[in-house]
Every structure is written in C-alpha cells, then in structure tokens.
Length: 344
Length: 213
Image 1: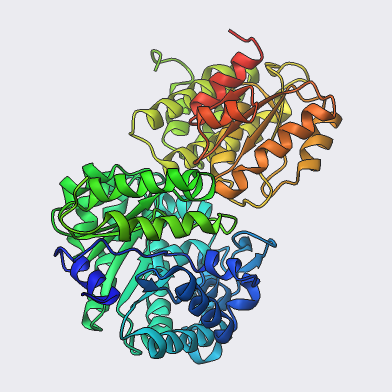
Image 2 (image 1 turned 180 degrees about the vertical axis):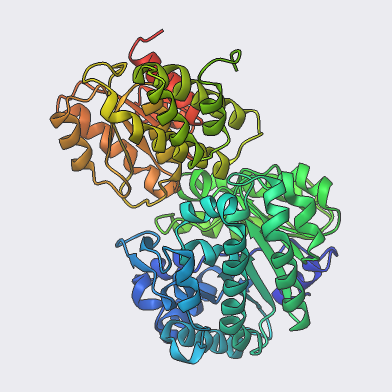
C-alpha cells in the first residue's frame, strides 16, 4: 500500500496513485480548531506543531502543512496588522507608501525574525515526526503576494500602470526576501512548496499584464524550488482559466485552483499537470452540510482526477469558523470514493 | 461614445485613466466658460459609464478602472468649487462601506466613485466598518441607500448583521450589497434590496432602487 507521501508524489508527477490523496491546505483553520490564537501560534513552533500533530491524529489527511503566515515577510519590513479574535489578519498600514521607500529597506535576514524562526523550527519538528509517512507540504504566500502586502494592493494596481519600473524593482526585492526566508526551510527537506501569486489573478489584472509583470518571476520561483529538490504547487485566487496556460509554462508540478474554476475545463486545458482543489471553502466547507461536502468531493474527483494527477483540497484558505465535521468528511470522501479506478 | 463635442478630450482622458491630463482639460473647459454641471454630466459621468462598459466587455481590469476613477476624482476636485449647492444631480444619498473584518476596499472605492459620477451623494465609511457605524451614518445623513461590500467569505456574513440592525432600528434606507463572493442568491437570502455584480451594475441597481429611470 502506498504511503500518504507516495500518493501525493504520484499525483504531483502526473501519475495515478492507488487513491486520490487529500490535503487540508489551511494552517489558520487547524490552529483555530485547537483553540489557539493565530497571532500567538505563528511565533511559537511548539504550539503549531502541537496543533498539526493533533490534527493528524484526529483527521489523518495525507499531508501536514507547516507554513509561514502571510503577515511574516511584510511585517519584517514594517507592515502592521490587526488580528480579529477569529478570522484572518487585517492589514492596517503598509511598509511602503512611496516608491523611494523601497531603497531604504535592507535585505531580509531570517535569523532576525522570530516568526520566520518559529516557522523553520516548526517545519523541522514536522519533518522529524512525519516525513516517513506524510507529505510535508509547506504553504506560504509567494513573493508577489507579499509584494501587495509590503505596499497597499491599490497602490500596486496604480503602479502597474503609472510606474512599471517600480513594480519590477518591488517584485525583484520581494523575490529575494522570499528566497532568504524560505531557503532554510527548503534545506530541511520539505516535499512541497505551495505558493500563491494572487495579485496576478485575472479577477484583478489582465492576462497581458500578468505576462508582463508576474510570469517571469513565477517561473523563476518554480525553477528555484526544483533546484532545491522540492515539488512546486502554484496557486492564484479567482478564475485563473485565462492564464492557466501561462501558469503551466512555469513548469510547476501542481496547479491549485480556486472554487470558482470549473475543474473539468481546467483538466482539459492542463493535461497531466497535477490539479489541486477545489472545494468551495465558504459555500461548502463553512456553510454546507456533510452531505454537501461529500457530494462536492465526489464531483471534484470525477471532474479533476479520473486519471490521477489530482489532490483533493479546499479551493482556497478555509475560514476558521468552518465546522470540523466538514473537514473530516472531505478527508474521508477521498478515502472512500477516491480509490482508482474511480467507479461512480 | 457619443459624437465629438467639447467634452470629448476630457472623456478620453478619464477613460484612459490619465489623472494628470484630465484635471487640466477640466480647467480649460471652465476657462472656456463651460458650465461645471455639464462638465460633470456630459464629460465625467459619460466617461465613467464607458469605463464600466469596458470592464464588462473584458477590456478593462482593476488597474485600468482604478486609474479612470482617480482621473475622475482629480477632475471633481477642480469642479467642486464651481458646482452650486443643490445643482449636482441629486439622485440620492448613499452610505457605503466594507464589512467589519474586511480591509479589501478597491472594489468599494470603484463603486463609490461610479455612484458619485452618477450623481449620488456618497458617505464613504471606508473599510472594516462595524455594524453601528453603518447605522449611525445612515441616521445622521438620512441615507436613501446603504451599500455594503465584502471580499472575504467570512466577513460577507457580517452583511446580514448590518441588514438586521438597519431593519430593527427602523431605518428606511434600501440596502444593496456586492463584492467577490456575494451572489444574487446570497443577497436575497439575507434580505438585501439589491445586488450589483460589478461597479456598472451597482450604479444601475442604485438608480433602480431610487426609481430613477
């Protein structure tokens, strides 16, 4: 019998595993579920590891998901946040308000940041505990997502038109910061780096603009992850069909798609590249019944994974208020209905 | 777009999102003794309507529409001192804001600008707005419409709290909702009076709620 890790590797290599693997790509939900405050947990390796060990015992998904919170790198440079009691952190003031401020920022030194240090330590603990069986799936906001938190997203949108040189410089800077922070984590031997590049979404910018500003850096990142012997999973929020061909051309092992994307259509477009997704985090996982989750999981497997190269997962980050029965049902559905050959 | 007239260059500057050129052109029109009110209606409003169409046609995305909104706002700064009170087409007063727990304000800002271009008086409460702030602003300004935006699915749930509070406080304003995860079904389910899928639709819905043809 294939281990969880082998199931996910088979899928990410475009093959058909024994069954559909399943991955709950949301540390915010897991940390909340075990009664911990996000703002405390992200600075505390032991807390995060405790949550993931408990999650693995209770839910037994195929991956454990260490991560670096979306606030970490932007905070390093001065972005400030508000933490609602339950929910995602809310950006208050961005680190950079003028293009000239970028020149004043120094390169990121991971040893100087306790959130990054906690993430490295937490990842090491999960690698030590789980790497024989589970896939170590490291999740983080990518450099271009971080860029829209180092500046304000609206300011970034303006600069895409009025100051393209600044955008290029900001993206290059954010890429270097990302590599500085993530390199020590990759060196621990994680299996997958799952990164987002969400300001490139066709819900925000044109495919033309995606190609001009984003694509070369997304490709650079995929190449770097591969050079470090890990698999890459690449996520952009929203309807990514207009740029899905470009995303594939980065050479990524897997594409993680949001719940608005039609899986059957994307499956036709991307060939044997692995597909990760895409149960609706709000409509189904947060607000649906367990029956809804089961039906949605079966439909996703049928549309996205009839011939392998598929990992069942939420379409995007799971709202912390989602019921645990629904998370459990999604995981159990992959195990009950995902055995190849699929027969329903 | 209508035929070439005195406002064509201004309209084009707004449509192209040129926030440097647009106010200069508006100033020139004022210097030529063009009426400020016609510059708004025949220049700015028409340009912003076209911008909304370009978005719906898939020609424009957020950066383009945002820059047009900025160009429009720059023109309004020039025109404001020249608009006599009561002369702006009073389509109604709208209190607008992003739900508590959500800081995604680009969509709301665009809708707010488009509504302003269509002649509404806008009370913009910004982002991460608590329920009470909507209620107080609606009372204080005698709002005709309360417009609520959310991008995140968990904050979208807060829309219902605003609607419930509006009703229980006996406020007579219509309520419209919009933003990424919001759908017609969801709007109906929580008892909103209107839903706009994008900024252009939001203007259409607002005008309909006010019975403006």
